[in-house]
Image 1 (cartoon, rainbow, N blue to C red):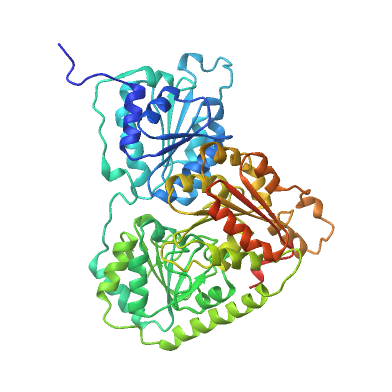
Image 2 (image 1 turned 30 degrees about the vertical axis):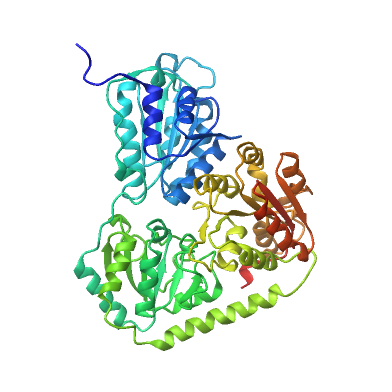
Length: 555
């Protein structure tokens, strides 16, 4: 008797499923799932061979955050540990990345097999779901569940381990189930839920009674694409909006009610205003130590209202007077729909606007000072002016994140901001390539320091090989700038050996790999170089020599 369903070989099933969920790229290190990669190419899914497993994970992470679809990375058994380390960023950023790895056959384990370690436990702390299968017949259920786990609840990375270091056992196996695509689980958010109506009423009642309320939007609000709803809520209520670093871009930075980024990577004026608030409404924000300056902001006396789609987060770090369990966009919309009148304390808004204006005045004075080496304030001003209307700014961690978050305003609704959730230096460059793969029609600009670009500069060759035309701006002070400032603050002036690098021309290295490379050591050349890079249509690196004593935290 013929089978009820035609038999599909594992590689065909895997490729058709991944393509069916809408993936356009897969980031990998040889050698893994070779036959599947061939089938994926036939289906229009592009394989991107990277120079390291960690970079592959970072690219998949950037792809996922930009597209709001799962990003896929793969590695064979000997590279699986490196892949796991790269998933730390996706885990901390709540990014839906799917990792596939191979491992030795069970009969070869515990026998000193070449290149083999038990890498499965390494994925436990950096994934939501970490499983292994033994046969092709297990693949259909496992694969569908990978997508469900990655995008539902609190999104995050997932991992599937398969037998044979190239996972060929699964590729060669036969599957008698049809390919099924569950479209609900192909993107973020998989589902949206509205908060309880009584909680909405209670929250607004407290906001009206407060004298100095503030809304704080976080990365969860960005992931939920809640910008339109939060802007409407802020404008109807007429109260200030602050953001976490991950919440930057939720509404334009030049909006009169936007007071900027708060926290350890935030603006001094924003932190001062949040410290004065007697009520804070957190929307899609993890209320972590960085956002709250080690949980010192807001004041312990402030009333806290929190919106989150995960009940376990409500009140985790600050006791909630009212909790709203629901999607950030729907919750903001429900709050806005229930608003009867603006908040009565117009003086509070005026104070916020004046504080931001004073902060900007100091910043503009610093931008006007022409020095050699170049002040980073001036570099940030040029980037702000030249970032296209639909441009995506991908920034690294440390000082790069502070410069970009606080001093490069996103003023157009189509602009986006993406930065590492876990603070891994060097993440931004490979992640920006993943972002560009996800958004081929949008300009992508990576802002990174020399300490960061050293990590994964080899991926410039990857960008050239595949024609991924992102623009990378390297803020080169020939040192780890944040470490320099921290060490200098201790009075230890003879510690350059701890943080300084030797001279190297990244622009020349980029040219040697086939990219456009431009070296800038004069202020007047910054804008022409960035314009040329944006217009080039090819991978480009603009290296700007800057003053190591520039400090974004002085403002």
